[in-house]
Length: 230
Image 1 (spheres, helix red, strand yellow):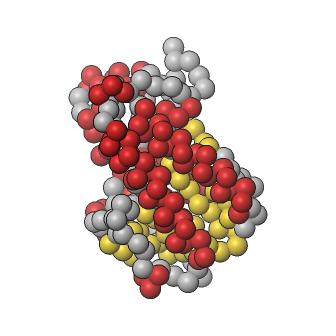
Image 2 (tube, rainbow, N blue to C red):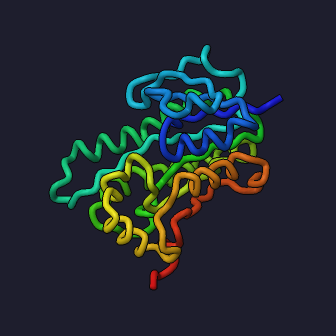
Image 3 (tube, helix red, strand yellow):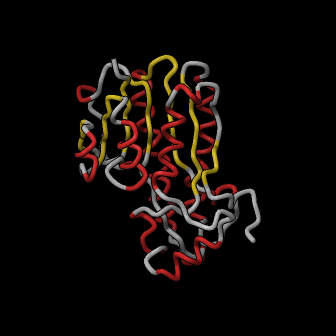
């Protein structure tokens, strides 16, 4: 019998690529505002807004073997121009939305199950104009380590911290050839990320191949967090 995976988000970008990877081997449940491209994956779609909704237990399986929280934001401005409510909104979507869902699904998580969350390379690397998103994602990293410690060995919890990835969220940063060249040049591997780069790591963290990993933050970032670019 296939195992059950719940994804919050999964209709676009990294989430959609992950859904494509997971759907042949898992019973996949995607809770998001719109089905988007996930309609072609065979997943069961659950209408859900991470900012306002609670999950209906009647729409979920009795047991979950994996959980992924995909919602995120990119607000890049100088700190002096960043409104306080932007910090609050980023924290609500990225962190508090995650906390609410985790509280709801913990009773459903099976022994040996796995959770995967998303951070950003900007938590480890100080980057200008990233104060709000780095704060929100930094909260996720601290939360995930504490959660991993509290629920080991029954539930594994790991985080992926990508660098710039070509998704709808980053469209404005990559909408010209010149911008694409500039962003690629910042990375030692000389390209920005593709959704499948991040999705393949998430699939690994959900699977048996990573069964001795928990409490980790993995940089899937073209080397930018640890290497100097030539």
